[in-house]
Image (cartoon, rainbow, N blue to C red; front, top):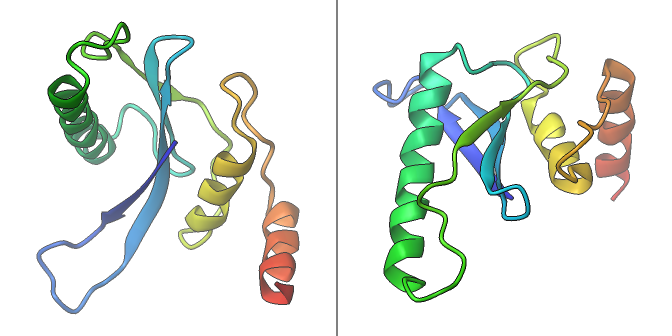
Length: 125
């Protein structure tokens, strides 16, 4: 699983706002999985950003593991349907839950109440 951060205004040096999402390399099912709490496959910014990373990963894998029995250059990308957050600031909590609980089958249920509990846990820790 790879944590992703995309700047939302990369040409504005004063705007450091961004968005967190996750990309999973699923070797068992031979695919890449993108989990995003705001956007879907229909969003060109997401698909462009994710494909850029995935293509670089495929190239790096090929360069360093060209003799491995596992090759990933043919793996397709699946955009996993996730629960969408109700605001623009909780994407980090959603991404953390994906990292902690994603097993390739069931998307962890993340609600506003889950985010409140996560804030308490992270504050306490």
